[in-house]
Image (cartoon, rainbow, N blue to C red; front, side, top):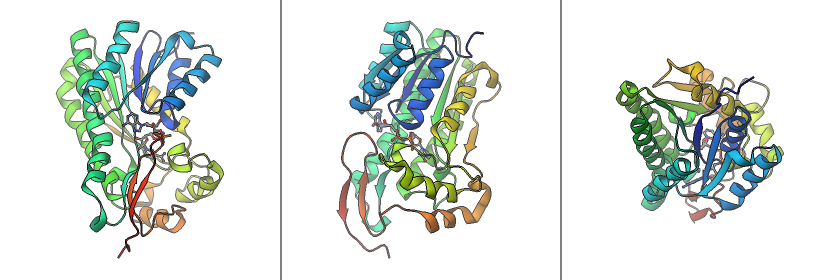
Amino acid sequence: MAGRLEGKVAVITGGASGIGRATTMLFLSEGARVVVADYNAASGEETISRAGQQGHVDRVVFRRMDVADEQQVEATFQTALHRWGRLDCVFNNAGVGGAFGPITEIAVEDWDYTFAVLVRGVFLGIKHGARIMKAQGQGGTIINTASIAGLSGGDGPQAYSAAKAAVVNLTKSTAIELAPSRIRVNAICPGGILTPLLHRGNPEAVRNFLEKFQPWPEAGQPEHIATVALFLASDESRFITGATIVVDGGATACGAFAAGRLHSVSPLPMQGLAGVDRGTTGELAVVRSGASSG
Ligand SMILES: NC(=O)c1ccc[n+]([C@@H]2O[C@H](COP(=O)([O-])OP(=O)(O)OC[C@H]3O[C@@H](n4cnc5c(N)ncnc54)[C@H](O)[C@@H]3O)[C@@H](O)[C@H]2O)c1
């Protein structure tokens, strides 16, 4: 039976780890050809190696890039075009924790870094992905990873939450604009997902926290998001655009109590500190001050 993405070409940012890596593997197993685009060359090469072990070596390539750099984003799409001659799907998924700490202590450069990765990165992915898709004239699908943190306050640091809220809104605006070209733009809002962004190599330390964070008894896994990305990338979702799909094991169903649950079970040792978390890019986090959180 033909895979659901047979003949399609996808660019997946943040494809080297977590949700992006799981989506890369799923898309490959459904017949797609994939450019894994990521800042971290070591985890990127590891992803390619795993894909090779599963027999997909000819349908996957790694491109080291920074989603916040326009030239590098353009070059990434050119990789897809040179190699496979087309582009059908962009998954704007790269992310970091970004600025953390009391709002009174956040450094402007940490705020700007957070928005550069999480919002400028998605903007550039939509801009250059849509240019190619419009020129092809056959439509396409763009998927943006937002977060439940973008739907309310309290589910993440302020800069991260604000950036993800921007992703939700940019998804709607561009879905309207690109619909006449049959380019669909949708967002996924994951809840707590057991990826290296949260566990940094020690999943068991975070699993227990995630199992208490949401009503659903098991922790969220990257594959839970990958299957939704597959649905949005495939023709099965052909009438869905401008949508924000929450995939969170019921966390946001808790309404006003969701943030309280997070704070009551969070293992994150960041209280009272301010700085910037550069996620799993390979760049170190910076702690700028041990300010009080009052
Ligand atoms: N894990 C969760 O609980 C969770 C929840 C909600 C949303 N998200 C979002 O899901 C997305 C994927 O996160 P994940 O949990 O798989 O994290 P992850 O750290 O496992 O993977 C993120 C990848 O993005 C890459 N990246 C970061 N900055 C980049 C840049 N400037 N240019 C290119 N690549 C860059 C990293 O190198 C890494 O490989 C992110 O946008 C994140 O904000 C995650």
